[in-house]
Each structure stands twice: as C-alpha cells, then as structure tokens.
Image 1 (cartoon, one colour):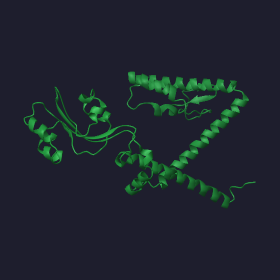
Image 2: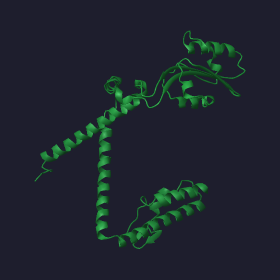
Image 3: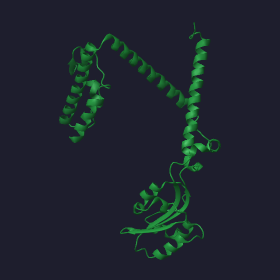
Length: 285
C-alpha cells in the first residue's frame, strides 16, 4: 500500500500533462468524470494503472487520478477566466514557440541519428589531444597502483609480501600462482585514478594523507580482521599537469562528436534554405 501511495503522489504532480480529455461525450463510452464541459474516460487513465494490481488498490489509484485531473481542469478554467488578454496572448505565443521547438528538436535528433558518423578513429583522438593539450590540465592528482588482498592466515603470507615488494620482474607474474587464493587484487592495471578511488577501494587507507599515498614506489601494508592489504604506487601525475591521453580519451571523443553534430546541423539548415529558395518556398522581400 505504501508503494501505491507513492505512485499516487507522483501522479498528482506529474499526470496533469499526460491525461488527455475530450470535450464531447461519445455514444460508445461514458465519461468517468466531468468538469464543466470537459470529460475524462477510462481509456485516458488505463495506461497509468499498474499491472496485476488488486481491485481495492486499483480503486484508490483511479480515485487519485480522477481527483488530479479534476483539480487541473478547475485550475485551468479559473486561470482562463482571470488571465488578462495581454497575458493570454503571451502565453499562447510561448506555447506555440515551445511546440515548434519540440518538433524541430525531434526532427534534428532523428536526422542526426540517421546521418551522424559516430566512429572516431584513435588517430583523430590523438591529433586533437596534441593540438589542444593545454585544455586538458588535471584538476586532481592521479596515480597508478597495484594491490592485493588476502587472508591474514594465508599459508604463504610472508612469501607473497616479499614477492610483492620485490622490484624484479612483473608483479603479476611473480604472484600468478597465488592469485586464486586472493580475495581481490589489481595488478598491472595502467588506468589512472584519483586518491579517492584508491581510498574507496581500500577503506583502511582513508585516514592516510594524500601526500603519503602519492609517493612513487611507496609500499603500504594494512591489516584488519578480514585480511591483509598490500599496496604499491607505480606512477603519479600532479594537479595542473597535462592529463594522459588514456584519461581523457572518452572526453575527447565526445567533443569531436559534438563538433560533428553542430556541423551536420549547419549542413541540414543550409540545405533546407537552398532547397526552399530553389523551389520558391522561401522568398525575401
């Protein structure tokens, strides 16, 4: 019943623009509510009724929908009676402008979906990055790190710690035979992340200062009742340094697609104007 009340609350404030009504009563269907000369029919609200709802709850929902619709019509009638002619003309203009914008934007989006080339080669992304590096300065410090998490009573705990701290060879290769017994791990991942990401990944680091976490080759060992965490910071980039391409690749792709979208819209507009002039559907006096 709680969900039904929440549903009704949403409908009271959101259904006004969705419920359609007819001004004339049809012979095929009788209205379920009438306000002045405006009528509400069952088919206007049936799509708002949840599936498999019990009869008692259905009646509550229908009652709420009817009341919501009635309040809208009563307010609308009073508003139309009391709004001045000047304001009424302005409202009508705004409504027409909004309607036109909806149609135009819907048409543009349809054309864009049909014609916009969404494939952005890596070469194009790299070229854009090289030409606009100063626009990609970091707003936060970034780092790359390795970590493993295993049980405190792990039989080969000491060996894992030694191999993780060793600078010889790839850490994942050194620890490969232990990975199945790990609770979790991140090894050899070159993704750049913030210190907050690291702290979220390993909550035991939340009290450590940012400067402590940003020391390259810093080895950190933490323990709690659940297990042991080993962390090694591999690389660091400071705030205001140029971001690595891998970190901003998706953003650059969106920028390129946005520029293509604008250019496509301009081409569509130009074509529309030229065709209208050619077909004498557009004249200037």
